[in-house]
Image (cartoon, rainbow, N blue to C red; front, side, top):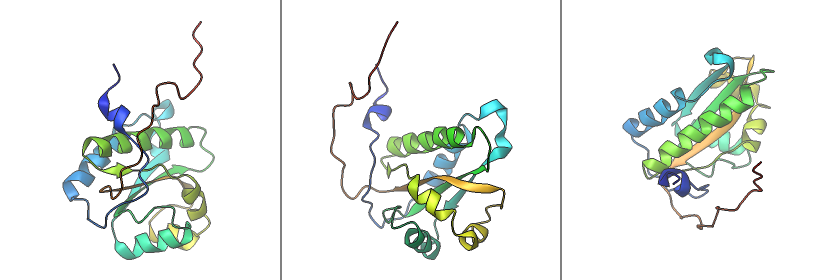
Length: 162
């Protein structure tokens, strides 16, 4: 049987303004730290956690409001042109999202906003993201303002067994 945390994870796009405690953020960072990395190269990925209201507003503006007003953003950055970067970032994002679900928080996987954020070198610099890295995924996290609809995902994709 599939773990209920995995079954209950949903893309949340409406968050309350309530802050996320430092203890919960610490747990989410720990989930990031335990994610797999291709060829055991941990130096090709890093995380920037954005709690600061002004920085979040700046990121929201340049990404077309793709972070949905979440009170904390997890920016997963990977070394440019690394063959494992996008895959590693996706695995790390899933870990963060599953941990958020387990703690009763909502989250969403944002790739388009991450791509847009890379067009703003001044913001990347302000966030301490090295020039040889790019933001690959943003995971907005917060308390859920509106529960997403539950859907049957048991037959979502085609599966072939030989």
